[in-house]
Length: 200
Image 1 (tube, rainbow, N blue to C red):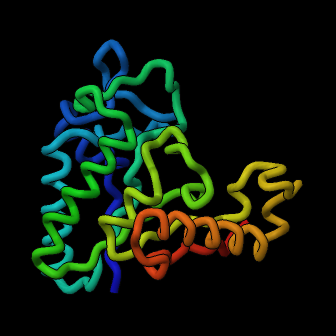
Image 2: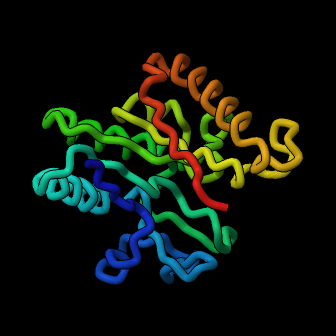
């Protein structure tokens, strides 16, 4: 039984501790276009909060901890956004440090952990503007679940006019690229456990 933990999109914790929220440049709590506030991915107290949730989830009987929304926000006014805890680090370095922190906290307890990432992390070489790099996750998690939803790929991606109409080809391409990235990270491609789409 896998317990999914939503990490940095957490309006509840922002309300209680707004000092750990992603901020506007003027210091207000930033919100995305849906009006949702986000936690600053670089804030150590947020990391502790998520580790505590993980420990409680495992204690009540879940077999694996699945960390979702382990990313920086992307759908909002990105020209008026500030991260108070980055300390000069890139988004991908902040997340890599967070992945390492989870790894250190749970590996000694033999608690399996997994991460949900955007599907395009298997084929892109940048961090997609949200800090996610597949190789950084593969070395720290027991499983990584790229969300390979064909409908979420842009028109003409890899030559497909409408990727949603090419589910087999998109998923095969994404996983082959993911295997290459696992090999580059010197870890097992068997850690890849994709989310597959059943909607739209």
